[in-house]
Structures are given as structure tokens and as C-alpha cells.
Amino acid sequence: MARNGSRAAARGALVLLVAGAFALGGCSTVKGWFGGKSGKELKPAELTSFAPTAQAERVWAASVGKGEGLVGGRQGPAVADGRVYAAGSEGVGAWDLQTGQQAWYFRYEAEKKKDDGERERISSSPGAGDGLVVVGGLEGSVIALDAATGDMRWRAKVGSEVLAAPAIGQGMVVVRSIDGRVTAFDAATGERRWFWQKETPTLTVRGNSSPLLAPGVAFIGNDDGTMSAITLAGGRLLWEQIVSEGEGRSELDRMADVDGTPVLDEVTLYATSFKGQTLAIDGPSGRPLWQHDAGGAGSVGVAADRIVVADPKGTVWALAKGDGSALWQQPALARRNLTAVAVQGNYAVVGDIEGYLHWLRLEDGAFAARARAGDEAIKGAPVVADGLLVVQDTEGRLSAWRVSP
Image (cartoon, rainbow, N blue to C red; front, side, top):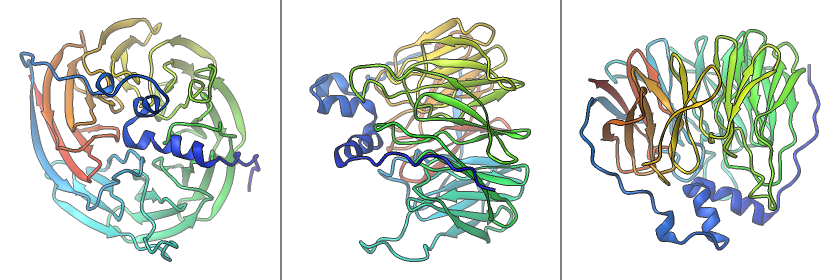
């Protein structure tokens, strides 16, 4: 069954150039091109010393092979059934979560070379679940692997590059491609079941929200600042809600992408926008519960009574779950191109453009610990499972971390 939608508008060369610049260093780089702040003002804030109240320990490290480099996919790990799955540009691997021992590695060979002689690259983070690991490529390939062995189960194709991790569940693999199309495949066979499409604005942040699956529903963050709920049975739109209005004089000012994967906490959906708004939504109905003018392109971290989000300027915010009021803000990581926020025990964790990890106390936002995973940027969302934090940098280095008081 297919649900037709309008094709996204073709983009001009200048638009592609500007959008691609986000892969090189974030929005601040683009603003500099248009006569904005000076290079000195755009440099990442210097890290200040503090008295640690927690200890961060690297448990293990590994390599996924050649990393994403400047692809702009924000590749990060996935964890399922005690294993870490991670992709580089040329392959996908599986590692034991606790020890880092490699279980398998799949080297992707495209069906044919591109015109310039280079093979297609894997561009998305992996999706993992229900015995599958699925990744997407720059030319629209979708590759499904057996989670236990790394053997290929099936391969499919979508119309444009895939930067978001595919979602797996309820007998389906749901893939979001950069043209705004969401495609559902049968998880066992790879047969296409349906597609749904949302028109994309002329200029967007490079990257996409991964689909979030709930019983019978897929939640999709869109490039126009909206959140959509569609049925898994056939791709029918259930509701749509505005997270952030794309307002401003220029296309750059109007960018309002919901690029961080939404988070579902019981029946409340939390979504945040590049424009700087975070919205709590009643998942079943799409009814907005509250909105706060702090948000960013990454996903929110969810704790017992609060959510934590990093905004495009590098300020980390904690917002009360009940009404969205600000509990604290930490501005000392300005212009450090922060990742999505993860919650590890009593700490909120973010990675940055220089490879540092920062642990902030959930109670007040004070720095508790800092460690450097490597020399390259961390752009993919950190993942926490069984007490360990797992991160991946743009050179394909993977590491697991434990934090203790």
C-alpha cells in the first residue's frame, strides 16, 4: 500500500552549498559567511576549570573503520540486547556493551560505483531491534543485517540519501530520507509497504529526525518545524502539531527543523527545534501541553522530573516536566556545537566539537566531570544503556564510559 505525497522542491546550487555547511561546523559557520560575527567571536568557548564531583572512566574503545568525516550524518551508536551497533562510512559492526569485544563487522559493498569512481557511503546511524540492524546510504540504499551474525538479510532503495537512523519494530522498518519521505518496509522481506511525504522548506539544517515508533504509530519530526503522527498500518496522518514557527526575513532565519528524534515518556512526547523551542505533546491526541523558548537540533534527555536540552548557542537547559519552567541553565559551553543530551544516572551528558564529554549535575547544572574521547568532533547522540555511556566521533572512534561520584 502506498500513500502518495508531493515531491520536495528542487534546491539550487547555492542552497545546497549553504545547507551542506552545517555538516562542517554548524550554523555559526554559515552566519559568518553572510557578514555576521567575526571568526574570533565564533570560536568555541574556552573550557574553564572546576573541582570535579564525579569521576568519568573510559571502560573500552574501538573503531568502526573510516568515520563519516564531513558527510554530516551525525553518526552515533545504537544499543540493543547487550550489544553496541555502530556504522562508519564503509561498514557496520557489533560490540559487546560491557567489554567492547567485537562480535562481527560487515563491510558494505555497493552494487555499483558512482560516476566519480567512489563507492556509495553509509551515511546514517544504525537502527537496531527485533533481530535486525539497518543502515542507510548517501545514494538511498537501505541495508538490513542479521543482528546476531552481521549477514545481510535484504537491501532496498529510497529516493534520496538517508541520514537518520531507521526505526525497527512491529514487523516494520521505517526509514526517513532527506527529501521528507518516510518509507515503511516489511522487516522480514524488505518489501515496501507504504510511504508518506512531507514537503521540505528550501533551506534546512543537514540532518533528519529518526522516526519514533509507538504502538501502531510513528512520530516524525519535520524540517518545517512540525511534528506528525502517522499510522504504522498504512502511513495515514493522524495529527500534526507545530513545534516551532519558521519566522524571519530570510530562509536562514526561518529554519525551524525538528531534527532531534522525539522522546516518548509514558504518553508525553517531547520534541525540540533548531529554532529554539521545546514542546511537550500529548502523544495520543497531539494536544500541546506546554512550550518553552529553549531548544535545539538534538534530542532531549529525560530524567525523573525534568528534561534537559542543548540550544544552538551551546547553553544547556533543564526544564520541569510538569510545566516546562526553566530549572537551571549552563551557558559555559557556548559555540561548542553540542550533541543531543543523554542522561546517565544523576548527570546530563553532552559531547562537543573538540571531542570532549561534559557531565553536568542534574540537580543544578554544575559541571561534575569532563573527559576527552578523542581529538575529533562528537556529533552523534550519546547513548546510555546498563549504566554505560557510549559515544562515537566523526573519525569512527567508539568508546564507552562509566561515571561515579
